[in-house]
Amino acid sequence: MFEKILLAVDGSEHALHAAAIAGNLARSEGSGSLRVVFVYEAVPEYLGEPNAQALIDAHLKRAEAVLAQALKRIGEIPGSVETEMLAGSPAEIILASASAEGSDLIVMGSRGLGRLSGLLLGSHSQKVVSHATCPVLIVR
Ligand code: ATP
Ligand code: MG
Image (cartoon, rainbow, N blue to C red; front, side):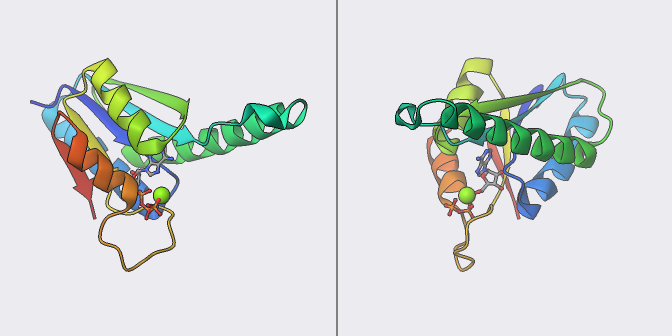
């Protein structure tokens, strides 16, 4: 049923838990692909060089570490696994990427790295679940 899964990760323990569930789901569903997306903050043009490039490099280094950690949690799956690092606002990018790729399920954590621990849902999971055109699995 879930042939193309998009997993969103931000380096939080919640997202890693979501990665483990996405891996289990991809195995039980025999999904064709699992795409793991990390979104980093776009670097403003006014920074100029070499600052802009240094900041991009730092974002990409962090993205690589977060994605590698997520891949470990996912484990082996029958279909393909791809990773993607995209710049912008997380919820908007996750929604746009799911539409562009025709994802049939988005998996994400209920919370992320935000500090407001009283909230049940973070702002990005709230926005994605409110606007997605495919099913969304919010993992607690
Ligand atoms: P807030 O960011 O609103 O202060 P929060 O960090 O607790 O609160 P969210 O950011 O909504 O909550 O995180 C919920 C889930 O959304 C995460 O577990 C992760 O799956 C996904 N997510 C959040 N930020 C990103 C990101 N930068 N890239 C990819 N996925 C993300
Ligand atoms: Mg957050």
